[in-house]
Image 1 (cartoon, one colour):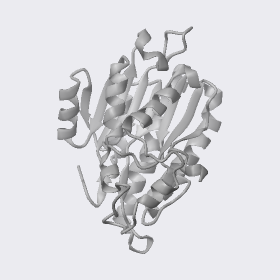
Image 2 (spheres, one colour):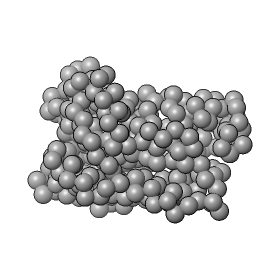
Image 3 (cartoon, rainbow, N blue to C red):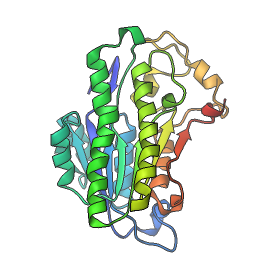
Image 4 (cartoon, one colour):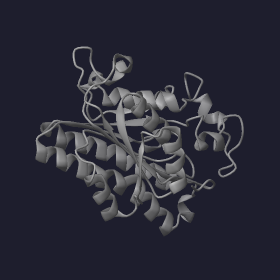
Length: 280
């Protein structure tokens, strides 16, 4: 796992939810319906991915974790032995497709994998561009194609949630390629919703701001200057009406809501988890 200046991870999650969910997981179904779709979650180990995997497993999902980094898989499996781990590189298009095909049908897909690096526009390298596009954009398209195509062939409904960022709508200094990738994810989300809705597949995105209890949150602590950009993150806090940043659970709650039956008529939506930042 790369730490600084890259915030990246190779942990991706594929989860299958059980057909029956207990009453304690009310967010996963409407009171009148005890059935939820199976779920697939592709995630990046920023902390959000791990937290999502553990929450979904707790709610009754069968979770498959895909990662290039065996240590991440071992750690996740140790915390919840019910989570199945598979060693896969999301940048390998064909290997990823084959891995996902082996666990279909997947009725709920969460794309959370991400590569992030502080980089001024004039110093962004081709390697940085390719890595960012491979994971942040192509990865979303690749896995979504496999999952959605399989569901359509089976004549079954599904649900996709993409992890985006406020950066896709309000870029910040030295996040050019990352923000561009997230803008692409936003556009993909809406295009997918338009094309797949008639097939019974909903598509939405979650757009968090800085998340406090992840590595990025530690790097970008609101009360100190960022060592990469030299910018004081108190400026971001000052533009956040609620006066606080979300934690991982806040983001996971948004993901679970979009996966649940409670959001049946929510489609093509970019859901901010930002304390009102995008309103400011």
